[in-house]
Length: 77
Image (cartoon, rainbow, N blue to C red; front, side):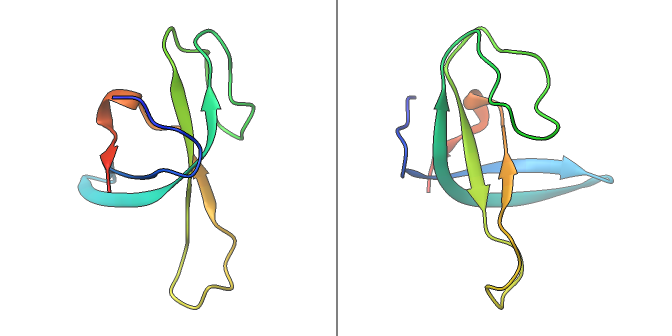
């Protein structure tokens, strides 16, 4: 499935032995073979992928976090 900037997406993430559903907004479409140039991004992928911004906390004062999840994990929110 392909997404565009501004689309709301969700995916499951695992860390520390537990799973968590994350939901955010696509803020960048990354072309195949390119790196998104965000902290902790890793190697370029051979397919289109997406940088997703996820709000943190409940007060709205914390900076949102950027993620580069695998495109196959994303679904419309």
